[in-house]
Length: 253
Image (cartoon, rainbow, N blue to C red; front, top):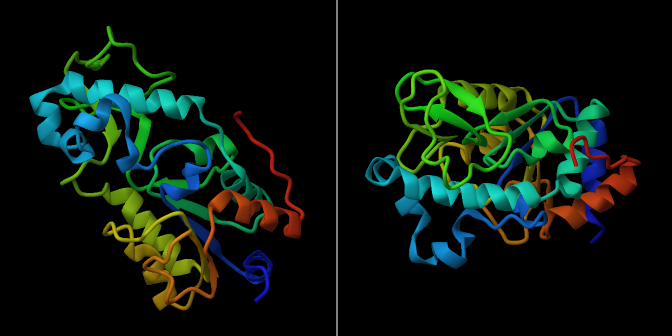
C-alpha cells in the first residue's frame, strides 16, 4: 500500500469544500495530555468529578485550581505540524473550516481563522449570573480564584462544556451546516464516540463527503474512510505538507 498522505493530498487538491474535524489526539504531539490523562495532584480525582456543574457548585475553588493547572500545561505548549498544516491549508484556500472538540486554542495560535469550538475555550471565563464572557491572558493565580465577574461581581466559571451539559446551539448548528456543504472531512485525533459531535463527520459522509481519518487506533470512522492513516497526527501532516508544498508557519508561537 502507498503512503496515505499522498492519497489525502490528492483528495484535498480535488475537493471543492474541505473541512476538518479534530479531537484531543491532534494536541497530544504538543504535549497536552488527553482529558483523562491528568496526573500528579489530580490522580485523586476523576475528570467527571471536576468537570461538572455539580462539582463547581460544591467547590468552585477546587475546579478553578484544576483548570489553572491545565491552562499552565497548555500555555507552555506549541502548535504542532498538524495544527500548522490545517492553518496552511486554510491560507491556501483548500480548507474552509476547522470544527474542534478541543478547548486549548492551539488551532487559533497556529493561524486557523475559521474555527468552530464545540466545547468552548479554556481561555475564556463566563459569569454564572449575567453571562458576561471575557478572555484570560494567562492562567489565574491561586489568590485570584475562584474568579469573579468584572461586571457584576458574581462567581465565574471556565467557558467550557462540562459533563451533563448540552453543546452550545450556535456552534453546533454551524458545524452541521459546514458538514452539509463539505465534500471532504479531514478527521484528526478523535474516537468519535462523544455525541452529538461525533455524528458530524458521519452526517457529511451520508451527504456524499469523503473521509480522511487520521488516528493511531481504529475508530468510529474507520469503516467509512476513503483514506485511513493509523498514526499520530504530527508525522502524518509533516508528510502531507511536504507533498503539497505547504509552509508550516505559526501565527502565535
